[in-house]
Length: 117
Image (cartoon, rainbow, N blue to C red):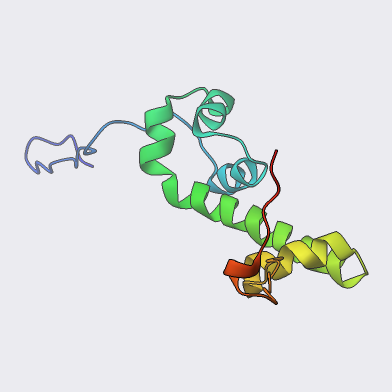
């Protein structure tokens, strides 16, 4: 603004701390999607874990969600291509299926003979 003493104009001062780190939010999402921890992401950018945890938690959550979504998609693709064990696992996890063996008694318990050991 003007340095003229007859027309004093106040300069606006920046509020808060100056930005020390140039952290790209998309890069944080990408690193989190690779499974990196907050400490590893902080080391990558050369800052503290607290800075990453406090200021970039939504981007970290987005990256982790992308990974989970991609894994589920791949699991379903593999299962639908005929991977029986993956079909069984997904059935147990998502559909509540189980391998419970039912025991049927044909005789009353009083008629069961016990062996002496």
